[in-house]
Image (cartoon, rainbow, N blue to C red; front, side, top):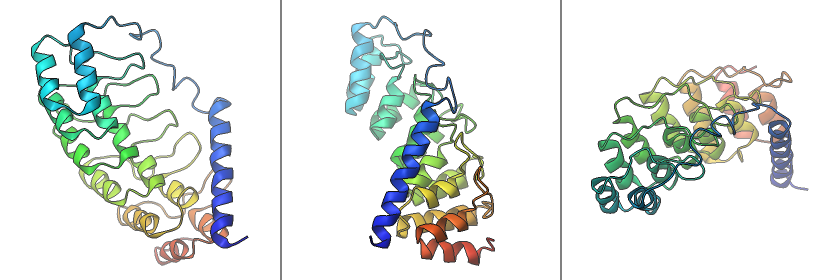
Length: 244
């Protein structure tokens, strides 16, 4: 088995372990804490039009639905607002219309996602720009169902530009530890592929002051993980930053 295959197998094993920990109750209650708080909301025709327009990214139809009396915080069966649907689909103009109309950027759905949190998954800096224009703006202390801030899934996925912008423009904690005991740096090393995108994420995190020696629950440091997975360039970057 080559080094790349071994890294892929290890990554899959860690993902399965993470899924098992979550299913066993790590972060228990995060995915259901809003149940019973509006899941049965009766939607008007205008509400349904608003949610559909946001999902489709039709900014003009969003404005029309609001003019027809749609509730800007109307929620679908998964407690998702129009703005969350727009953010999840990276429908930037629809989101801009909703933010301009006062949509809540911190509205939480059944999965503990918010419009801001899902940008960490999509890695959209354009959507980040729109949401940061809201007043009040994103609550960077809110966490997803894994107990992570927006920056952590972005690190996992190699969204270096997004990580750079969110750390530069918000007060999100670069060393926040999620329910699995992982920081953004650990996720970039453990769940990343070791390639250029994740190398750049590691550089961005270190430049922003991430602790290169902050270990996981087993005491394994980012450098340990990089070396054991064969991510040689990331290991070099960490050593250059003084990692032990």
